[in-house]
Structure formats: C-alpha cells, structure tokens
Image 1: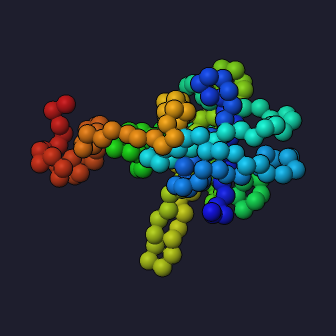
Image 2 (image 1 turned 45 degrees about the horizontal axis):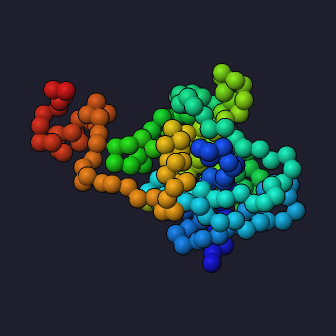
Length: 222
C-alpha cells in the first residue's frame, strides 16, 4: 500500500470503450487496484489496473461504474505538436486543481529512450501530483481540445548548495501514446525487445561526442 497521488485522463481505447490513462510511476510497481476521484464526484472509487509499461512510464486503468455525470473522454491528437504551440497542463498537485500554460519548446528531450523520441518539452509548470495528467492543445483543424501529451517529469539543475528547477516539463507525446495503447490493452505488464544498440541521428550528435564515440572525424560522410 502507498499514499502517492497523481493525475490522469479519460480516453477511448482502440475498441471504443473507456479507460483512464496515467503514468506508471503514479500507480507504482505492485498496485493491482487504485482509487480514482473525478472532480465533482462525492467519493473516490476503486478500480483495477489493466496494463502498465514501466519503460515508457504509462499505465491504463479501468473506469469506475457508474461514471459521474458529464464526464467525457478527451481525444488523442492525431497531428504532432510544433515548437511554439500553446499548451495547457492540468493536474491535481497537493490535492488542488491546477492549470498552467506554456509553449512547446522542443519536440524531443534529453530523456529520450535509446534514441527514440518519446517526450516533447514545454514550459507549462507542473508540480508533484501533476504526473500522469494531460497536456492539452486546441486543434487547429476542429477547434476541439485534444490530448497532446502526458506530463511525466521536469528538468532540474543541481547547483553547489541547492537544486534549481529549469522550468521545463517533459510529456510523453500523443504519437507514443497512440502506439503504446494497444500494448497496454493486451499486456498486464509491457515487455520490450532490446538489440543492445543505441540509435542516434548523426546530424543531431554534438561533434565532440561523435568523435569520441566513433573514433572518426566529424562531420560523418552520411
């Protein structure tokens, strides 16, 4: 048992049914059930964990029955974000509803997994308890609010005597969520193959790092 808290969002699964999406680190490694509380509902309800993926840091939860009145799922964005897009981060840090805003600063992050761009970076401030919550954008095509990411981590910089936040938030992108969703639905615990190599675009690798890693002179031939 644990007393950690976090946020989440109601989405549609690939078969059209509803589920709650959040971070793996919000529910923990061993939890089989968690309590969820919809804003405006009088009480929390216990639900089962349907699937979890520790590597990507996503988890899928069943929805309580009945759902509170007026609750509807958020659509997952089908088009990627661009640098400069206005986004809003929602969550429930310290037991308080929170909404912050910022812009997309990068479509990748230093925390990308083995060369795979899992995260996008933005400047919407988040706090403990925002993890698993939605990063939203208004669609330029439909005008509807859509999910472009799941807020997962922040960037920090350690000084000599203190730890400084750099006001950057890393969110798992909608593109990764869409790809991971079928796996979360089928597997209680996500398993990934690994070939023992790291993929990197040589155009993005710093010259000094390239020469140290490859033993070759920069720039590469291709």
